[in-house]
Image 1 (tube, rainbow, N blue to C red):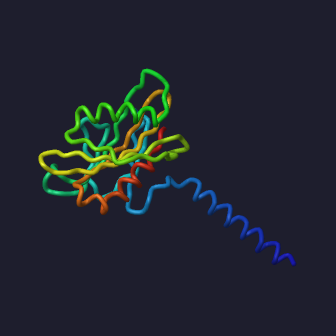
Image 2 (image 1 turned 90 degrees about the horizontal axis):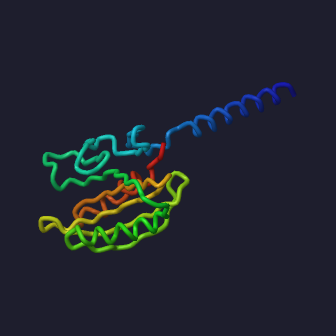
Image 3 (image 1 turned 90 degrees about the vertical axis):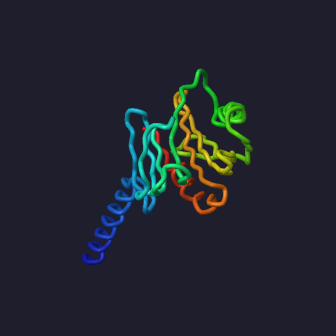
Amino acid sequence: MATHAWKQRVLFICLCSLTLLCACSNGVPDGFALYEDESNGFAIAYPQDWEEMHGMGTLVSFAEPGESAKGRPNFGVTSEKLNSSMTPEQYLQQARIVMKQVMPKFEFLGQQNETIDGRDAVRFQYSIVIDGQQLTLVGFATIQDNMAYVVTGGCQNEQFADYEGIFDQAGRSLRLI
């Protein structure tokens, strides 16, 4: 009888240890690494073999490895201080007006509500034409303390089906810290 109680305790301790280990993991998908930017208040997962880049109007960008910087599938994180409180849907509605004005042949393809890091978010998709190439992009927007955070990934239209899953994993991995 004592052996049975001892086995139950060991099993209980093992289960507790596994639960703790799972709770403490950073939730980074297989094949991805974690980028943390404490000064801008976010963390995001990215494919571990993709190139990290700074500038280009983003807080950080990641691009598939390649010889040319132009035309590679990539995604980036931007943030914007908002003048007033709004939902991600309201933010996207305003952003669509600006995108239509500044992006060549902008076509909005759709949106859906999401939850990212426990916050309301919106996933949206659109296409544009740059240098004669049709690009398809997917974005994720969420808001914390009147600061909008947007993850946008894109590539050539014919590549999009191959990269959409990567863009979705990255966008949904956004954590505000």
